[in-house]
Length: 345
Ligand SMILES: Cc1ncc(COP(=O)(O)O)c(C=O)c1O
Image 1: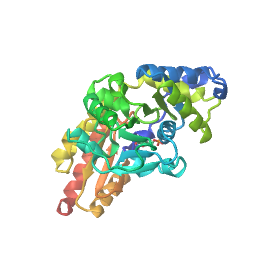
Image 2 (image 1 turned 90 degrees about the vertical axis):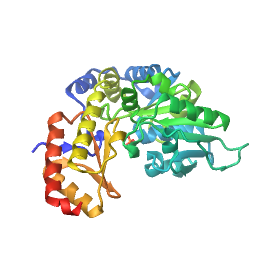
Image 3 (image 1 turned 45 degrees about the vertical axis):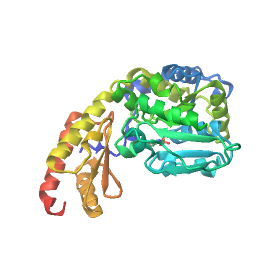
Image 4 (image 1 turned 180 degrees about the horizontal axis):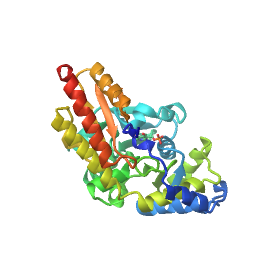
């Protein structure tokens, strides 16, 4: 049975061409800046966002960590949305960098609704640096993209309040494609931006941070302190170069399929915020956790994997491994499930 894995875009596998570029990559010791493939990838990423420099790291989590470690020192303050990945899943920032991560409820929602932003008065203004983090796209809100005007607004606010800005752009290329805006416009006023190679871009490994020279050299030190120094990492960086050349425009297809899936589920009677589906992530709301779990199990038995760990919500993510036929099959299954369980929905 073909497995249709909608749990995350992290499940994608490197394609044959990616494996080929790994085999032929020029390699060296990146500890001495001598891996030409890593250097090329970092330069390419920096150029895309028109920043001075880039840094190749192991993962999205490490990218956020080294970015914040470059911008801040012990006891400095990091404001994040309470639903952000940084707050929910990246404890290392407080545990190992000793930064104070302060969750703000509805930060992204206010931003997207053009409402006034405000932050609690925490820390010592004359001593502590303060950093505001955004997540673009915002995973827990259907992967909604934040556009350049909204980012400008945040940066104006940040400037007024003496804040630095970091963007967790793990899925920034989904935002760029969905918004049809340039990478430069989404990054020009922020201090650091990180993005993942191993999500929508389908690489087996890695993430990149871009920023000015000083911040990236500091980020490199933090990366090495965390044990993330690379040696012949060009093997992996080669897939990143390939992905930046060939895997970005195809994200349109992932977005179209997410939309197809959302529209299909909506017309079958499932509860879904259809207007929020602009990239590759969607959530389906159920009345009870029991119903949610039985839908997940039913799909699992028929070869479809979804995430059901959230309160009464199922998450589905489209990506490189998902095609139009898969979407049809999922909709066929959800229709059968609904017919058999309508009374409980
Ligand atoms: C928005 C966001 N940021 C950061 C990460 C962390 O990335 P990684 O799993 O590569 O550490 C994820 C992972 O799913 C994510 O969705």
